Structures are given as structure tokens and as C-alpha cells.
Length: 388
Ligand code: TRP
Image (cartoon, rainbow, N blue to C red):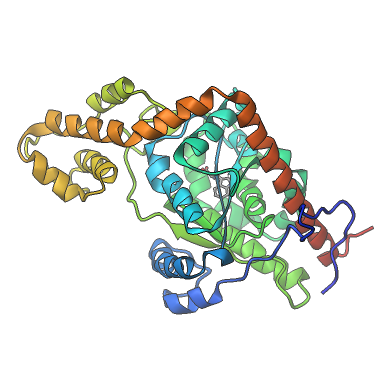
């Protein structure tokens, strides 16, 4: 293969190229026997995730994970049990972790990204509090990595307008958008997200179901880039989704837990705030507490939350409460959440005292991400014959 355009490409302090390719996981796909691996329907992704878990346990060093969040406010328990705790688990297993603070993505559904710096710092605080270790993992903002954005243009050329148009997550976001007109970024941000993932050649992306369409698009972009420009070798891996096994938590109003719907319990909430939020949560009039997500979604989501915090099953939690009613359920939920989050909240408060440390974590992460992105861009330019 052609060598990368080398101007401006850095090596890490050890002198090794920073952009070490992570091996593909074709054997995972073959073993999953879950149909074509590029059609990441939920059940296929679940089957594949089980196989991937096995491969991760055996050889964590072959995986590089990229995942991230929009800096629109503090992270909540839906994020935590959906994906955050999984990141730390992977880090502890020895997988290399990149976490993007997706600042440009904030502008998909609003005109102005308010209080961006504050929200970015809140996210860094949340990450540190849950145990993301900046010595082993890279936390960065994609706005600070210009080469990542430069990947977006060639990537955009690889997807059709109708593919962008039919993305179900984008459709859902448009219906909840606070803009009167839908911006071009709303349609194209999944391609930008592909660049988030591919600039560091991540081969594993822990996600919730809503992100599966974006991951499928990322795989499409990687495959098409390799086919069109790879001259027989793969420039990009086709990353796998690692689906969280935790079912979706509902917000206190019974709809999807979301920062913008004011129905979320944040990691940073105080014990009193947590009690107040849980107290106001929607339930039903049945006194006997049972776990039945289909017919009793609100009660079941509360049971699930308590169960996740207690490390038990929701059925066991329900059996403890029996016919004591919703007030007893809420008491159990509040106590479970507050007990589980106490150490995380204590760490968060501690890190919050040291703003200089937060800034340093971010600038070191940004620097590292820039070096990786520069190396990938050089490879892309070489593959596309645009080294001038
Ligand atoms: N779209 C994700 C969200 O809304 C955030 C995100 C940006 C992301 N880039 C990513 C997630 C790359 C996984 C991989 O939460």
C-alpha cells in the first residue's frame, strides 16, 4: 500500500506510530451466526455482542473502543446503566478507551450550544467520578481535533442522501427538535459520528439501541472507503456495536429518560434531589408491585433501577415489596440509588474542587486524539491520492 503523507504526523513519545491498527474481528462475525454482520438489527447485534464479550475476555488488547456523549448537561442514570458503567468495565478489562465529548453534535437540534464549556467540564467530571482513568483512557472534544473533521468530507461522498434521510434516530430527533427548521447538520451528523469512530480506528463501540443506525452507517462508510480507495487493503476496520445488556430505563414521567425532558436522575443529583424526583415519579394504582414491563412500564422501570443498583433481579426487588404499594417501592428505589451513587457522588465533588486538573485531563486527551487523527488523515490522503 502507499505510505501515508507524513507531513505533520506525529509519533508518540516512545517513537511508535500512534495510529496502530487494531485487528478486525471477522471471526466474531462468523461465530455469531446471526446473519449478515453489516445489518445490525437489534437481535443480531445482541448475538454478536455475546460473542464479542468472549473475545474481549480472551484478548482485550485487540480492541479499541470509542464512545461518547453530547455536552448538553449532566449525565443521568439512563446513561450510566446504558453505557457509562460498561466503558469503565471495558477499561478495567484492559481495552483501550477513547471517549469523545461530541460538542459539534449539540448543534444538531438547537441553534446555539449554551454553556458549552460548563457542560464539557461537567462531562469530564462525570467520567472521572465513575472511574474513567485518564492515564489509560483518552477523553477529548471533537471540536479540538481538526483532522477528524477533515475526514467528514470524503466520508460524506460515500453515502447517499436517501441513506441519510431514512436514519430512524435522526427522524426521532427531528420530531423532538427545538429548531423550527431542520439543519443540514441534523442529517449529516451521523457521518461526522462515523469520523469520530474511524479517525482512531476503533473496532468496538458500546452503544444503546438508538445508536445502532449510526454504527451501521459507520460500517458502511468504512467498507466503502476501503473498497474505493484501499487498493486491496483495509484502511478502516468495520467497528462492532457492543450492545448494553441493561434494558432501557424510563424517566420519572414514564417516557424515555432524557436530559431535555426533565425526567432524569443525574449522577450528580444530591440524595434529597433524588428522593424528590423518585417521589414524583409516575406509577399506577395497583398496590401489588410486580415486574411486568409490557403492562406496567413505569413500575417496572423503577424496579429495574433499584435492581440495577442492588445487583439483583427486578423480580426479587418486587417480591420484597409485595403489596406494600408505590410509596414503598419509591422508598426502596431512593435508598438503592442513593447508596449506589454515594461513592460516585463523593468522587465527583472532590474532582469538582480541582478545575486545573479537569482542564489538564482534557488538553492531554485532545493532544493525543489530534496525533491519532493526523496520522489517520495522512493515510486517507495517501489512499485518495491527495498528498500535494
Ligand atoms: N450520538 C451520541 C449521543 O447522542 C454521542 C456520540 C458522538 C457518539 N459521537 C459518538 C457515541 C461516537 C458513540 C460513538 O449520545
